[in-house]
Image (cartoon, rainbow, N blue to C red; front, side, top):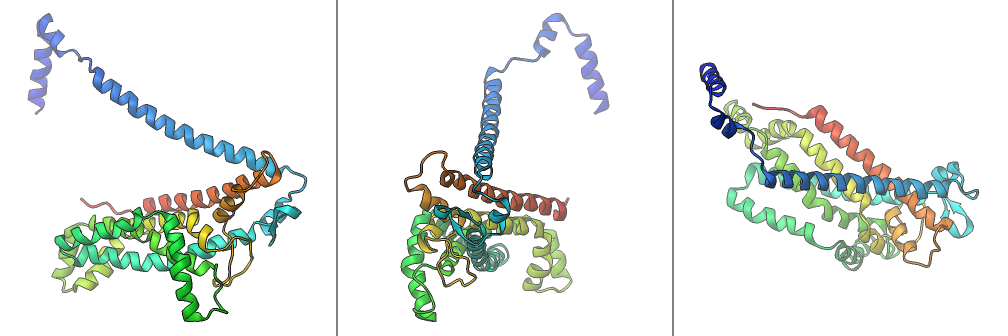
Length: 319
C-alpha cells in the first residue's frame, strides 16, 4: 500500500501539465448547493430555538418584574388565581407531576415488556405485524385521547371506585390515557436499544446454560441500559409537555391536591384554557403564560440533559 501511494505521488509529480489539470479538484456545484442547503436548515433550527428561548425569557422577566408578583410566592404558593393576584405555581406543578407519574407508571413496565417480547421472543413475521400496529397509537390525535379519557376511562374508574370517589374530571384518567399515548415511544426506543445488543452476548449466555428469560433480563437488558433509560426520560418529557389530554380530562381549575381522583389543572392545561380567553397584550395574565412556559421548558430541558448524561455514562461499545 505504501509503495502504491509512493508510485502515485511520483506519477503525479512527473505528470504532464495536461494530466495535472485532470487531477485538479473538480467543481461540483450540485454538492456545494446541497451542503449549503443543509447548513441553512441547521442554522434555521438553531435560530428558531434561540428565538423561542428569547421570547420565553423576555416575557417571563416582564412577569417577574411586576410589583404584584413575588418570586417566593411563585415557587411556594399553593393558590394560582391571577384575578386576585395570587400566583403560586405549586397547584399546576403538582398536577403536572401527578399526571406524568401515572402515565410513566403505565407506560414504562408495559413498554419495556413489549420491547423485550419484540426483541427476544417474537419472530420476524410477528414483529413485522405487531410493531406497526403498536406505532399506530402514536398517530392518533391527542385530542381524541382526551375525549377517550373523558368518555371511557373516567366512567370505568367511577364504576370501579364509586361515583362519589372519582370526579368527572380527574388526573387519574388523564394520566392513564397519557400512558397509552407514550407507550409506543417507550416500546420503539427500548426495542431498538435491545436489538442493538450483539448476538454474541446472547449466544454466550445460552452456552453457559441460561434460559431465554434469564438471557433477556440479566444480559440483554443491562447491556442496553443506556438506551432504555434514555427512552424512559424522553417519555417523561413527552408526558410533561402533553396538552390536550389534560386540558380535556384532568380539570379546568388549579387545585392543590394529591388525590388522583379529583380534578386538577396542569401547567399545559392552564395555558390552553386562559390563552383561549380575552387576554390583553402585555397584561400580567398574558405574561403569566410565558412564566409557566418557562417552567415547562426548564423541566423538559433538565430531563433531556439527564438523558444525555445517562447515555454517555452507561453506553457500552461493542466491536
